[in-house]
Length: 503
Image (cartoon, rainbow, N blue to C red; front, side, top):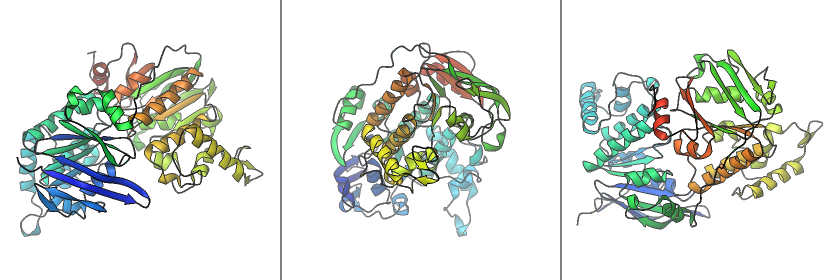
């Protein structure tokens, strides 16, 4: 029996008193797609950072085709044939596709070999269907094409093992199928692939085996993912059964948010073009679309961060006139932004301070220009308990929290003040199934209390489970709106790609 392509034996890695990985064994055979599963904080990212040379393990060893190797940097990993596609792409936007591929690679006499690069790109494209225009700047590529370039870049450098971290989070359904087709083609030609995802249906459809981590240790292995239910996988990940919350019927009330003919300029991404929509009390409206089709501009307008060039907006029947975050908050809007680490919480501040910052000037937290530290701390302690935010205490630096706990802190901060309207961008991106269920339950609780909720997301399965209606954005416009009863992934996917008609 031949040796595995990659083998990790007894990998242990600690950060202070916290053991991120403890005696983890993992192997990938040539031509195998291995799923790596686990809750947030289970140790997946740490394990892959050890494999890719970002961290040195405290104990254990890595073998490539049966031979021990020492990987101390990403350069060592690349030289060993290990490539990694991160959630956030590492590309130079002003350079072309070909120039991004050739960065750091010298040809004869130290010169850049453009001709050889074009031949290599053509070969990879033909082998796996990963077509790219070599002369296009990266800034002109769609998100799906940028991901394709990251994969091609790894293959261009001779990767024998490819690590993919949440690769479908930003893709339309048709792009997901294209990605899976390419990955199956790579595996058929002997590449090993590690596929990290919280989307268990995709894991079941693509992978040959799965390794499941929990609290830094291997909690179990799945030898036949296609014939293992998502519930069984979730139970391995979390240690208990995960039951999706039931949305149930809604009885929407009056309109609490209206946009009428909203348009913006192009200076900050795709402009909005004559956007008109409404959300009623006790209703969840989903906004679907491939990333980069105007969703960010829409969220900024609704949140008061950006004023439109044309159109009008009302919150709870009152016109928004100045389009400032303070104005829309005063009218009853709560906001959970896409970027938790920069526009969400201030990571360098204690969690307690960051959780009250948007309302720091109110009587609850300050008086005559002086803060009320006891009130701030008491508020944070109350929310930490109510939302099971896992941290040492309210004075913990916000940036030290995991993604799931950051999202809970943001949710707690906004829902504590009973907003009439809540706008949320990518509410569960990167979160495990348990954390996602918690977030969904809170949204449904708010819906039952009469809050109107706008959920901007790219996970169509999530939107179908959660939303009463789903509007699809394409090139800055609303391409169509479907009630949940008539919405399907196929129909939404057609609208997301600009196709006319229905599936």
